[in-house]
Image (cartoon, rainbow over all chains, first blue to last red; front, side, top):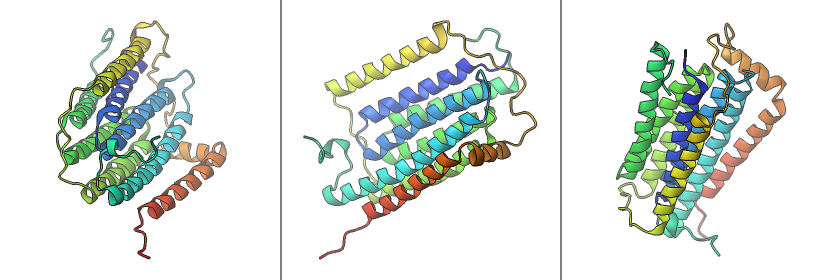
Length: 103
Length: 177
């Protein structure tokens, strides 16, 4: 008996929950962004698991992971640019102070 | 969970890497200084690359090391140094918000673990012989990317270039009038 799908899915679930908790509770914007990246990594592990061990193993899961990584890189770039612009204007990097779009 | 699990090099490697990944994730949550948090996420990305190699996605493992552990971690460190680089995460005040976050996260985790482990879903069984046996991973990805997925590939490159140009425009200092 080798490694099964369940073990990889469990690891993905644990990583996703760590990332979700960080995104919900941390105060620094950069750490919130990092937590979102952690959640995306957990999703990537699940995609690759089903690409390797799924009902019909194929390369499609790896292609989707590639797209997720590209979009994640774009997301981090835009997120950090917004952070730097906000920091220049408001001199804080706390999520709770960023209420420009709150009504 | 461990029924029928034979100790091979693969399983030992999996559990060691999983331990490393979860330890880095917990460090990310528990560190005091923001810069240490950003460094511990680098450990998570490298561990995830090792998991990708176990899943026989070699190309993505190297892409993960290059893109995440290289570029994104360095970019995060630069952003931290450009803002308050000595900042400490303030000690958590016990308000309703973190309590609800804990309850929600733990609830989601329990639901997912129940679905994975105890709900008698028949997950596909792992086959000992790899579906990608004897084939070049890079070649497989390239062929799929430039035949079946050529339109999404072009779109994603447009998205990437627009996002990066937009990021430069956003972070650019406005000229004094």
